[in-house]
Length: 346
Image 1 (tube, helix red, strand yellow):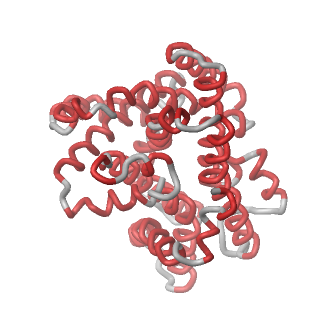
Image 2: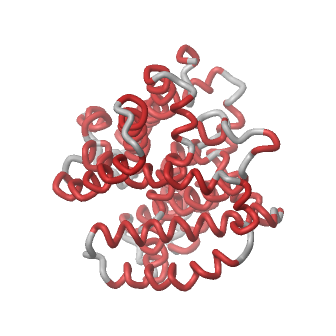
């Protein structure tokens, strides 16, 4: 998710960097921060206007699938240049290591400040890091990404299934996932494998620069625009929809964000530069934003006595995206960089 932390950015350096990827990741991570500051405000007992809740629900349908599609786009390139063992080691270093470190940090802070946070933590949560990641707030995604990456590597490189069989198997896993919802470790791997596989299939087209004349134009965006909003409206009105229909809506939302990201990358307006920066540091934002937005909410509500949800939302949203970048830039040259990357696993 950042230049030094994921395969995406390491493969997109210099003149060949695909800026649209950074914009897409930036949009996704900004939406993630919005969701978590909003949920924190709701759990604090403050009244939130319905349109803010609906805005969160709209982006819910595609936000996390988008991350898995993006990772899948670059999976084959990463797998092909490594052995299965070195690929696994790389994922342990870039995904599982920060997951465990920041999971321990987050749980520890929530235990110490239990009188002020919304989280109901106990020491069992340290074990849940390994067996029930959904119990650890937002960090579940990293564990799921690690598991999906390893499963895909086994199917693609070790078993050597062709793309059609990988997709068919992923569809089956997606359907089976509804039966193991209470086991998040298993459910998330089964559920998101299909989006990772679709990213892999789509890489042939999305990484082909010959198609960029079309992608950078307004035509795909304008075609997708009405379908995107129509399906998001349908999602808001039918929360109990079939899982496969939901998957289609998620993929349509992902395509819409991709199209918008291509337009942003072509225009390259300075106004939208913060979105690209958020994409470059999306891992660091993901790891730290919940601590930041929680601290902002607690400070504003308990110390400043500010209880206007929109004010708390706006301040928390901005600082939740900005402060993690600043912190990472400050600690990167120091020994504290070990919080993000193990020095002995290079």
